[in-house]
Image (cartoon, rainbow, N blue to C red; front, side, top):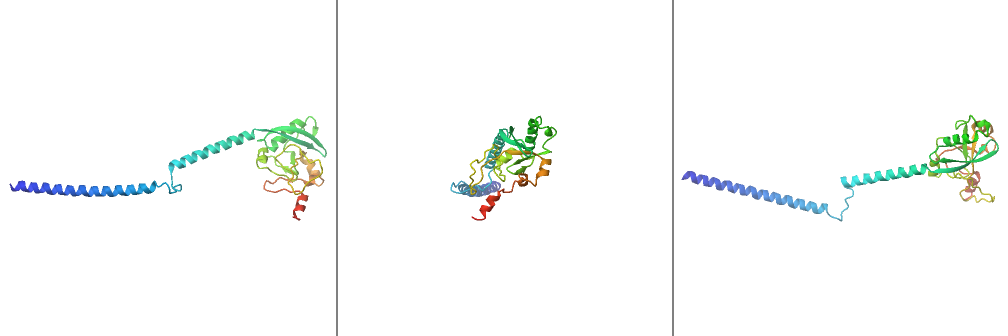
Length: 231
C-alpha cells in the first residue's frame, strides 16, 4: 500500500514538473513570437528607406542592367565605327592637288594615308614608295598622329587651330567677313605632306604655323588671342 502511495506521489510530482516545463516553454515561445512580430513590423515599414541595406536580389538586377547597358553601348559604338565618311584632302608639295577619298570612322590616320598613296602613286612618281612613315596629314594647321582614329576625332569633337578636326568636307567662309567673337566653323581640306618637304620648309608659311596635335590642348588663332585681351 505504501509503495503504491509513493508511486502516486512520484507521478504527481513528475506531472507537475512537466506542466512547469510546458508553461515555461509556452512563455518563451510567446516572447519569441512577440519579438519576431515586432521585428517584422519594423522591417516592413513602407515609410523607411532601406535602399542602403544589402539586397542580393536587387544587386543582381542592378548588375544585370549594367551589363545590358554596356553591351548596348559597345554595339552602338561599333556600328558608328563602321560608318563610312568622305574626306576632302589635298596632296601638298608647295601647291595643292585636291582629292576625295572614303574611309571608315574606325580607320586610323596612318591607314588613311596609305589608302591615299594607293590612289596617288600612279599620278605622282615620288609617292610610289611612300607610306604613312614618310608622309603626314595636316588638318586645321595641326599635324595628326598616325595612331589616332577618325572616330576619336568625331567623338571628342576635336578642334584644330583654324577649325574643327571632326568635319572633313571643305566648307570655307568665302565672304571675307569673320566675326572673331565666334568659334570658327570653317573646315579646310587637310594636307597630305611628305615629311622631308616639311623639314625643308617648316620655317616658311604655311608650314611655319603647323604644330603637333595634343588632345588636351585648346587651340586658338592669333587674332582670337588678341581679341580676348580686350574683353
